[in-house]
Length: 167
Image (cartoon, rainbow, N blue to C red; front, side, top):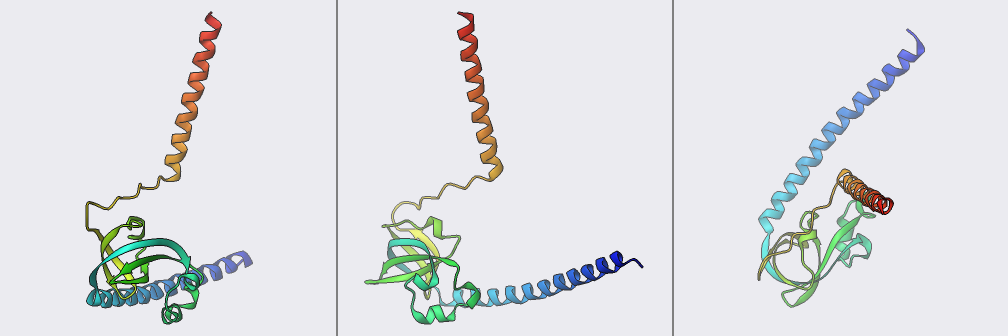
């Protein structure tokens, strides 16, 4: 067998072993996440809060209690979290918002939120409706819009040159 084929077989075996490891590790993490979701569902409560501010901050500068910072895994301590400061039950508190709900949370408005500890799970408006943020366009949509604008500009410049030549 040529050396190249042996090297390729070794690389292929390593990739297969890596994929098997990632599969079982992902199943383990999914199970852990499902268990934590169940615990959060058991302890959730609905409260009224006035949202003061919301930012994406690293966990160390977020203003969360030290116990919450210590419980986070080391690999997540540098990542930014959606942090919401709100007045809830007469106190100004710092919450962590769900990443899907964070864009919907209005600033300087009163909302009814479903919380579990320091985690905001859901937000509903008290008066009126919550404004939905505009959906982000994908890169090919942006590219096609720019191409259409350039095409229109080119057509308008050609038509203005044609009118100038006729006179």
